[in-house]
Length: 211
Length: 388
Image 1 (spheres, rainbow over the protein chains, first blue to last red):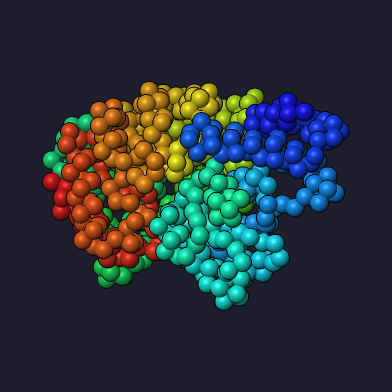
Image 2 (image 1 turned 180 degrees about the horizontal axis):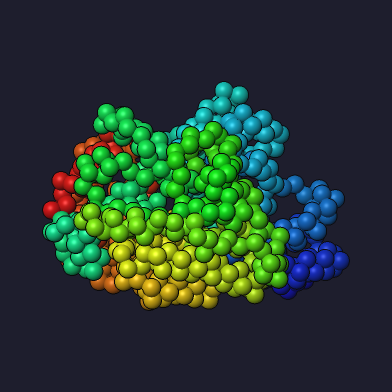
């Protein structure tokens, strides 16, 4: 049984989408608990991709094909997770801030967090602070903001302030990222965390949520 | 030394009398429209007449007054819009060419030569519709590719270049006029889709990159047939880096992209004695040896905040084999530095990079809109002060 999950992880890691889809079905048919398939098949593969990306052993194509394979397998697994009452590790609201139309980094982070077992609410690009606030409903534990442009970074400050004003700041951890963003900037604006690349984002969120 | 001699000495790895300065020489080493407004206000210049030389970052061509004040050593020639559709207002900014400053509102869209739709937000454009997204390998043969040999592209170009040659002592730069195969592949197909192609559909990726390389070679053929004998620097772009490293592995670069680069730079060198200049953003440290072997003479923009791109290291490891054109002032830090910090940064860069030549002072990209005129002035006047 463990072998099947190891094969699933290997298929995801190699970006072999049809194989990952086939094996996840086999695992379900073999009666493996859906939660176990997620936590021992899909998540470890994405963690490994993240590790490889962070240390320069994998690059964007390898990360993307793994993420697409994971998403395909997860789509098959999801109804079974719901049926067995398995809750996601938490809901993450993610978006590129207002005034910024760039989504490459934001999408990669979203996929990595999904692979780590979080439910992703992707607000897209050019997202005003009010939309982030509205999206912070029940179960949302993290707000993730992206910005490629130095001119749009101040929108992150606006969003932090809007969450405070709406009394939703305490409910969520705020993480930020993007080419011009730094750890020092995250601290300055009162965000809870920053990751320099998508590979480190999942670990950051787990750390912040104590998972 | 005059400006041309100074630039040529530097890019030939000889130490010139002064470090050459570039601002406005290329669409990746100039001011953005708003930074230019602020600099003009600071200098009490109320003249207009700039051109937008790259709409994506609203990069502008420099007014002569500013070029003279900052003692810039290069002047630029650019291919023109194709004749087909030139009169149509909607085609403004469509070609790989310059057009008069238009202050477009947020949400403005334009379609580039390859069919990608770009949408404006505050100060920049991002690609939003990708004409190659759904294409198959056989579709690439029937796609209406731009015609590099449209006679409009080189109309008046030779006369303009010869006049600069005859009447001035500046180094003549032929600016970027078509995206490099890798960046163009991302822009026209969609970034994620092309990344997936590289991994899942290598046959398509190879063919697509080959076609984009054909286009670039065609554009170079048209341009250098007209002016190859009277330019000093020719500019190609191809963004391959991100903050932390390459977007794709070195292995993938060598398999897919390097052959395209070899073709482009071999072709350029077959048509001109000018030096080949490549713009590639982010951390491209890992491919610098490959770029040198592929025929790149000069690397821009040397984004010093990206991983492994610190100037001392680059100079030490590669300074004998490739010249650096950029890194002189970090555009992302510039708005936050005070003018004393700006001066100290510029002084330090010149101290590191000037010995032995191989360096042209330029910023890490176009000066950003949030940069005050005072800071831009401080950066380039510091370069003038410390250049030697």
